[in-house]
Length: 413
Image (cartoon, rainbow, N blue to C red; front, side, top):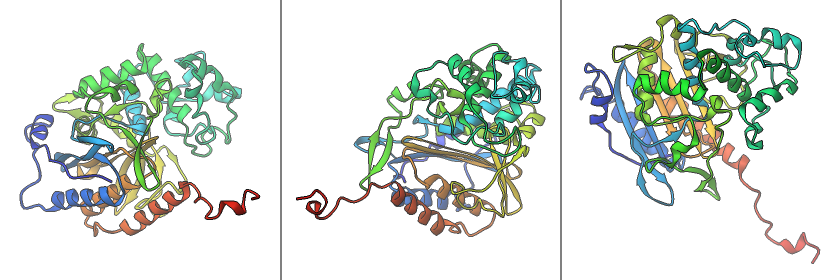
């Protein structure tokens, strides 16, 4: 869902170590991917997007497509700010990991040791819930329950207090359940262990350390002149909508960033915790983040190539699955007016970030599938018809019902 833009080779040169360079002239894979993204932008009706790609540990594509706002001119580029939505969770996992590396936080120590005021629904949760449980979605709290807490105007302390009334659907560590409040708590634990707010922890230990100057942890970042608007499809056309404001439960989904900044995060993960000669995380800590901690069921939100054959597991702020003999690390996100995805293939030194300014679209999954299939020697068009078909089904599902052709038959006249 995007329009054509210019590849920023200068930005690539500035962003990555000197040995990093765009793909060789004889390699058509990046040109093919670029052409596919341009095509998919139109097919999925996405106003604008930004993409960063790494292969063999080197940046090979950094580009904006389409427009920031469907109602006025202004092209997306590699520095356009998008909401990251739930890709924020990967930042929260990495920020917590810095505390583990410093000996301030233990993945498996009950969180009451750091967050003494936390009280769960029952004594067992209160006594035994850990940071690993929170980051691996194994609290047992019902999926998506509590997502509205931000809208009531509660501060972080009050949201934390109210979680004692959350009745788990499953026992601790029994069944994976996607929980945004769980990540909010994980962020508060990491913050308390580090002696600063979650916002400052992410800002200092990740954004500042990696040199991500256009990244932030609150919605205020969208006030930048080069920030994208949020869009939804209405009557088949993209219209601007209000972005989601989730600053209070920030650790779950409030971060903002750009393709250029997220490229650095990818390179850090793919280089086992090091970026541009600077150690951000220990190699063994990155392995711990990627390690499969909790198995999850496959559901309707998991689009190809994810399937029952690939499986799906939670690590610490990321998900993972097997595809074509390779472990894929991934985190996706969705808010009102935005879709995002971060994908890593560690043994290939490869990854992709896709940021799109339209909600409820499978565009990121289409680009992900093309990238993975091409990278792993599979026909890149594999899965595309299925993904597009599922996208069309989703559009029909959320579309308003048509108006009656003859209203008089229904109003008694």
